[in-house]
Each structure stands twice: as structure tokens, then as C-alpha cells.
Length: 179
Length: 184
Image 1 (cartoon, rainbow over the protein chains, first blue to last red):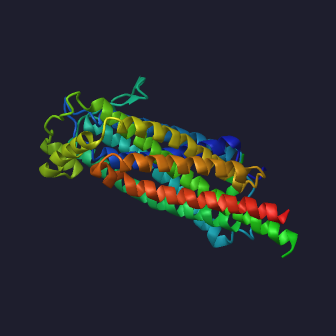
Image 2 (cartoon, one colour):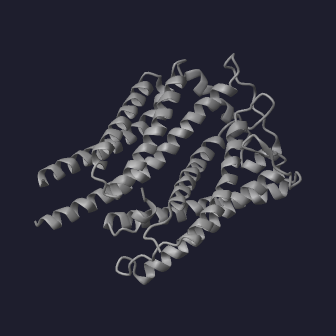
């Protein structure tokens, strides 16, 4: 067993991190853009990009979990991670993964029922799973919204934990910052 | 203080500074990337006449987004206000600064990782990256100052906040370099 995470896991982790924060920042901006019409096309590119990045995050997360469990790092030393902290870290990670999936999936379902199609990275036209259904669109849109707020809260705990270990210099954060 | 204790203090300091640099570097990279997209989208979707068409506010869309008709109209007015108030040079300057800012921010995050990993060269290289970020913030501040009151109200304060954060990171890095030199 190695001390840190594998290089692939480290790389995917940081790509997912940047992507998630970009989706938060860009969505707050794009939702204040004018509602679309034939002449008002401000939302077109940001919404497509938002969906593309969201779908890519799901693919990357599946890849990350595969790599993460295939190359397990050695457990953190007990003196740096008491029992309650270890349990909190495990719970935080599990909830984080579930919320990332839930946020991306609910966003995609909401988009499907809105009647707007998705062309993945402007290349692959994704199958049109849903039909235009305003009620289901609203339902999944609400799930997407609340899942993303929860995700932000859990991410804050995740970042706080990482900073705590970095400030203590106990080597735990170094496992995900391998050069 | 013994040499071992001083070295331990130093490595703890590098680890803390590096972790903060990683978090701030990532947040700044996405902030700059969003600014880059913002400018490009507004430039591409604004008609040549710079006059935006009337707002489109169908009831189902208003219900979906929880908007009133007044808010829907204001969304168009906000973009129109930006288009009218930004001087012609401003979008280009913002795109250049935000592209450079995205790259420098990602570099500073990577250098933060090098600090956490206690690489000997990291403080010097990181101080250069923070100085570049400081210069980008400074240039953004000057651009906003010269772009009129509406642009100033939107850009000055966040730019100043980032400027102060980068100033703190740069000073922390320089202090670490001097500390290391004094220890030798």
C-alpha cells in the first residue's frame, strides 16, 4: 500500500474540484442573464457549458472512485486521526460523492424535461430521455438547487478538514497533493 | 530554540501557507475563468447597435425561475447597463487579464502544493507567482477605476480584496524565505 493517493486520483480530484467551483460561480451569474428568446441568446453558451461540465464530472467521479478503490492509500496514522475524526471524514466523503451524483443527475433530468436538448461538448447529441413536462422540470430543478446548496455545505466541511490537517502538518493533506 | 524545532516550525508554516495558496488559487482560477466567459458571452450576444431587444417573459419560465415580470425585465436592463457603461477597451482588457489570471491562479495552486510538499525551491517560485497575481489585480483595479462609476461599483471591491489576499501571501512567502536564510 502506498502512502498517498495515486497520481491519477490526485489529478482527477483536482479537476473535479475546479469544475465544481466553476459551476457554482458561473451558475450564479448565468441565472441572472435575460430569459432566452430568438434575439436574446445570452444564456445559450453558459447553459450548454454548465451541462457539459456537469456530465463530465459524473464520468470523472466514476473514474475517480474506480482509481481510488483500486489503489487504496495506507490508512492515516491513529495519532493524527482519532476515531471520531475518522468517522466524520468517511461520512463527509460518502455524502460528498452522493451529493455530486445527485446534483448532476437532477440537473440533467431537469434539463431533459425542460425541452432543451443537450449536445455533449457540442459534438454528441445526447438521447432525449424526457418529454417536455413543466411539473417534472420544476421538481428536478428544485432537487438540483437543494442538492447543490447541500453540496456547498459539505464541501465547506471537506475544505475545513483539509486545512486543519495542513495547519497541523500531519501529512494527511500531502497524500492528495502529491507532486 | 533547537535546529530541529525551528525546522519543524518552518515545515508547518510552509504546509499552512501552501494549503491556503491551493484553496485561494482554485477559487481565483474559477473566478477569472467565469469573468473570461462573461465578457465573451456578452460580446457575442450583444447586437452591433448595442441596443438589446425587449425582455421575453413567458409565464411558465417566470414560474420555473421564481421571477416577477419586473425582475425579468430588469435582467435585460442589467446587461444593457453594463454594455452602455463599459468603455470599448474594457472587455478586451478584462479578457486578457482574466486569461492571464486563470493561468497564474492555477500556477499558484500548483506551487501551493509544492509548498505543502516542502520543496526547497517552492517559496521563491511561489513568491514570483503571487507577485504576478498582485500585478494582475493591480492592473484590474486601474482598469476598473478608469471605466466609470457603474463598472467601478461592480469590480473595484472584489479586485481590492484579492489584491490584499495576494499581498498577504506574497509577504508570507518573503518572510519564509528570510526565515530560512537566517536559519542557515
